Image 1: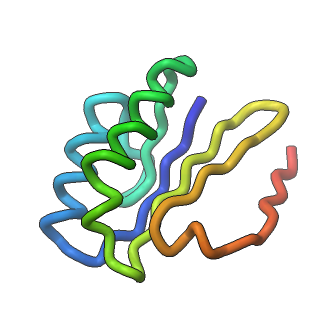
Image 2 (image 1 turned 135 degrees about the horizontal axis):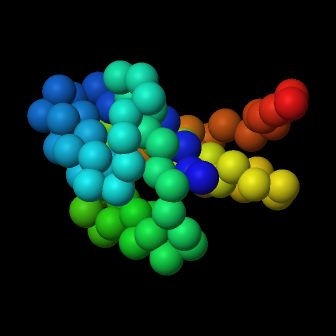
Length: 91
């Protein structure tokens, strides 16, 4: 499972990004999507973020991608790239 959380300041960009993510999964909260697909879908999403969305991000915009597995890898985009805080998940 993949969780994608975002904070995008522009309504137009935020709506465009949400519509894009809705192709792959469903919305858990206003700016959080759950995606139940494999690694190839994740690669496509990351590629599209880098090629279609990242260039338009403002300094305050951020996107987090949480790969929910034993390794729990996190990918950050936009302002979130500057943060180096650990995430702790408690079962």
